[in-house]
Figure 1 (cartoon, one colour):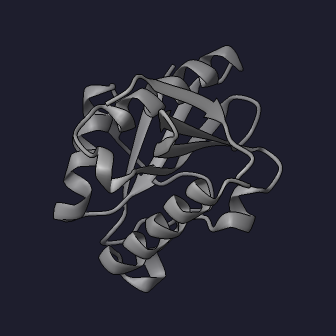
Figure 2 (spheres, rainbow, N blue to C red; figure 1 turned 90 degrees about the horizontal axis):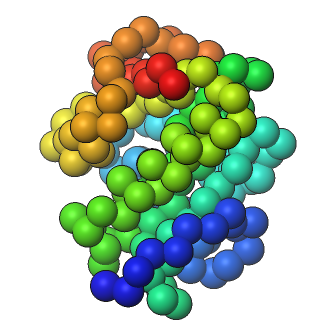
Length: 154
């Protein structure tokens, strides 16, 4: 695989949009309808959300986003590795980039919501190895039987 290039993404590239569509479809396939909190294209274009994409040469390898919750906390959103690049460190590279940017912005905590089941295990493992720990619901989320909430103090 060529070296990864991670760049801020304005969501205009066809490959980025296709990967985002794949992400949304995957969330709907693996999550109860009432527990799909993934943002669509318009949701990711809202103020306070920054999206990054990882590229291996001319091919998109992954995406991830940071949503500002307030001046001190942020939420990880829309983490997805392209199927052609699974298990190659793409997700970890994007997550590390987002964590570094959160620190640069002066955030003190990152949080995320994810699901349960086999489809979520690889991501959960990655989050755990990066120091995220299970915790309480945050922002507008409510505890439910499917969602898991994780936090990283920066």
